[in-house]
Amino acid sequence: MKARLLALRERYETPAALAMDPLAIPLRFPDPMDREVAAFVAAHLAYGRVAPMLRAIEGVLAPLGEHPAAWLRDRGPAGALRGLEAALAGWKWRFHTGEDLAHWLAAWVRLDAESGAGLEAHLLPAGGETADGALSRLNRRLRGELPDTYGLRFNLPDPEAGSACKRWRMFLRWMVRTGWPDLGQWTRYPADQLVIPLDTHVARVARYIGLSARATPDGAMAAEITAALRRRNRVDPLGYDFALSHLGIMGDCPGVRSLPGCRPCPLVGICRAGRV
Image 1 (cartoon, rainbow, N blue to C red):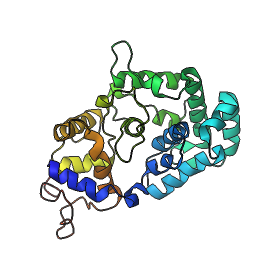
Image 2 (cartoon, rainbow, N blue to C red):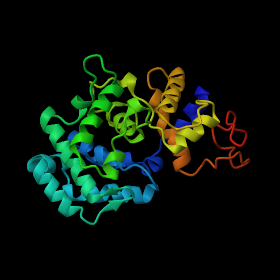
Image 3 (tube, rainbow, N blue to C red):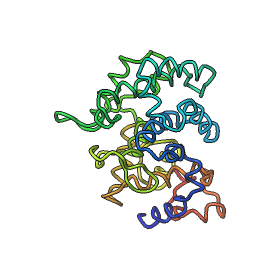
Image 4 (cartoon, one colour):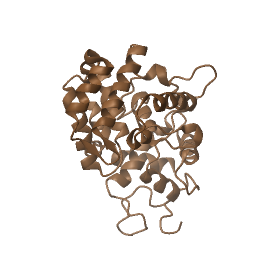
């Protein structure tokens, strides 16, 4: 299986695949703090069809200009909130409104002001916590500070209650992992506690190739897949995530065995699609 997964990475770790990934947007910014702000927006809007989702992310970031972190810091939480509520008044992406994103970015400003350097310090385990405990703690805090709208609740799942936390896992992978295509900016977060961002594509393919036998795409399934990938690559188990997800995102996996259409796929020899 490891050889097949490596071949899958070779097939999908390409500029064309990256162009269809929300991470492409943070990567445009040269400054690390600007990348963090863009990633904080992009990861939490990463659901639904790719093309309109990318436009939605661009729409949120457009008012912040070329230096989003400086724009937010210069205005402070209250000023950023007022400015973005006006700038994003007509913006909407599925579950999220412009007001949701104004509050989301104002929260980043508050957290950044406390740490002096973005969000990493708020997600570090403390006092015997796990990384999931730190994420749960931050999300409990934000649930108490942010308006009780569906879009913002959608951003604040609890890993300790069994949620897969796909969008947070994606943000953490981007910020912590150092291999292509990730940002690798956070050096204190425990990389060995990263968990795969479990989207529908990863869950489906993982079942097809025996990385998980679970039916429900929840936190337990994400942990099981991560553990299975770690057995293939102890140092960088999430290095397979981009390829596994883009097999579905690029429309190359039909979900049922369809030879000869499936024959180019590196996983075809171990795939149980159509038989599971």
